[in-house]
Length: 155
Image (cartoon, rainbow, N blue to C red; front, top):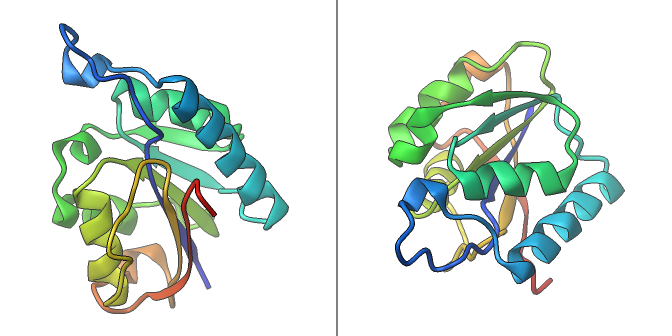
C-alpha cells in the first residue's frame, strides 16, 4: 500500500523586496523543518522519492528534512493547482513505496482534502499529512486515500 506524505514548506521570511520564489526560511522554519524530519524518521516514514516545488523555501525545507531520497523539482507544484499535484503523484516511480510532496498552501491543503475527503481546518507552515493509498501511484484518484495522521509543528 503506497504512502503519500504531503508537506507544506516551513515558515519563510516575509520577503519584502524579494521575488516570492526566492524567499528562504526564517529561524523558526529551519527548526520546524528539522523537527519534521526527525518525526518522519522516528515514525519510519522515509520517502523513496520526493516531489518538490522549485521555490527556495521548499528546497530548504527538504534539505533540512534530510530525506535522502531521489528528488524531482516540479514547477507545477509552485503553480498551485491541486489537479496538477494529482498528475505528478500519478507519474511517481512505481518503486517509491513512500512518496513525499513538498509544496505550498492553499493547494496542498486542498489536495489532502481531495484525496481523503477530510483535512484539518488549518494547514500551517510545516504541517504534514500522511495518507494511505490503495494500489499503485498511477491509480490514485480523489477520495481513495485514508488520512492516517496530520502533524503540525505545535504537536
